[in-house]
Image (cartoon, rainbow, N blue to C red; front, side, top):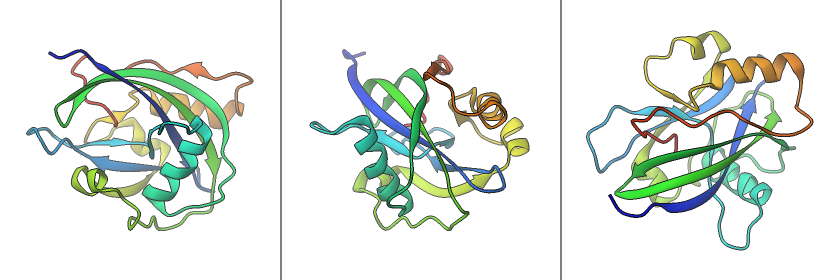
Length: 169
């Protein structure tokens, strides 16, 4: 395997008034693998802060602008291969409360259009027994904790993912 590329990333925990979280279903188009679900977000571009990246990614992937992102609340590091690229991705997670809406996907990049299928609002109960993998693996428990206890004073580690290395890119 090649030397991994380190990639900073920003992700968003987008939660509606019914405590549902928006997730995106995607897959790696270069390999035959079952799709997985993940939070909106992606890589931090050169010259961009993590917060700027979170706002840009949120707009690209959902159509939302001017969202009050709080945090970061969590962080994690995940190692995976995506589209032939060996990546160690260091992620920070921001939190936002929004009114339920239908995501607009017209801002998806070429890679996103190739690897992302749909968006869906998930209830906490649905997160407990998903039909496909959800990343990060600790999402259900950690989101419950966040909604119960409020935003943490400092972001904390929600852990890396399963050794199979499917990303939640």
